[in-house]
Image (tube, rainbow, N blue to C red):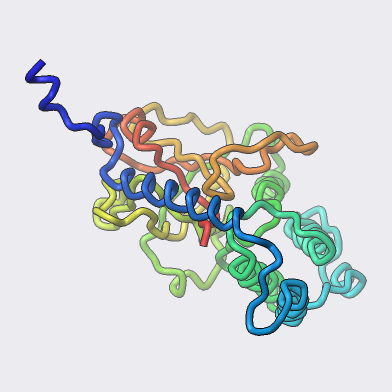
Length: 294
């Protein structure tokens, strides 16, 4: 009885093989849930600054419309980037533009950001698309800026398959985390593509050892360096020395299967070098994210 009474009231994250940062995430989630509940209980008829709630909402809507760029005309785009057997990226670009043009009518892509941050994110995504249209294919793709990143990944595999004249079914991804910074990668690789814009949760990337490492205290998310996606034919998946890190669009690690057969949230898995067993990082809940909730 004395021993039981000496045990802590609140269990530490280590009991569940979690990093101590998990306590911070838990506290943040609890606080956000409580404050969100309090806000929902507030009366909806209050006014601020002499303006009614409807007037404030109308002004906000007008400000958002002023920030958001205009839809991109498709006819000039199709002329500049026609459907080509040798270049699947043209089709990916046109499809992305069509999706974002529809987005101006109805909010559609998964995001946990509040409205103000969401608008900033949308403007950044459209800048990525417009830069691609004006200046040609980028040397490093912002994977978080795609409405449907799975189409981009499939397009990259198609380009490799058609270039090598082999079946796409025999091709899978190999991965290399680059030492070079974004500014140093001014040219596309011979095969595959460079991607950026991912965040790592539950671990960090050690640039010296070039492998996964434990998170630093109070560091919940870290930027992932540029990753080279390398299409490889008849590749044998390594059985040790790597962690198959899932990539999600948002912090909500769940989704539903869409009509395309892809998850609405899960993108794909990236193999990251590690000197630990996979189960260590699985218990840590390590994953990569395309976007955070702020």
